[in-house]
View: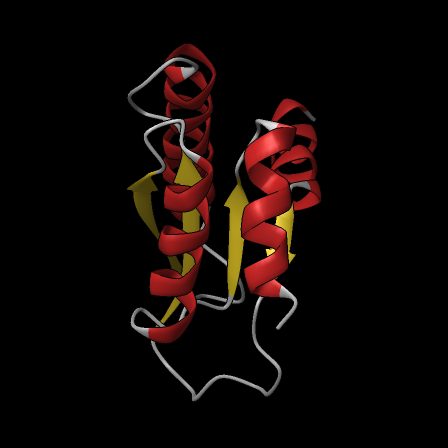
Length: 117
């Protein structure tokens, strides 16, 4: 039950970034942006620990339809311009299916603007 609630919470923070279906793969790649450094790093660091724990448990339980889930994390440095830049990188270079975070709403607005384009 705890695991299901953790995954539900995790998925509720996800912003979908793809406009078309991703190519078939052996793994599902998600992105995560968080303030790992800077003024609000305590929030981002806590979120990162939660994401890693949920990922470990989820993959240990078989992943999603037998596919392992991978998360690529970038530090927004608690800066709006980095939130936008890291979101851009996850979408355009890493080709992630979805993005988790940023938990700081002020930074989420900058990242969301990029994700909606």
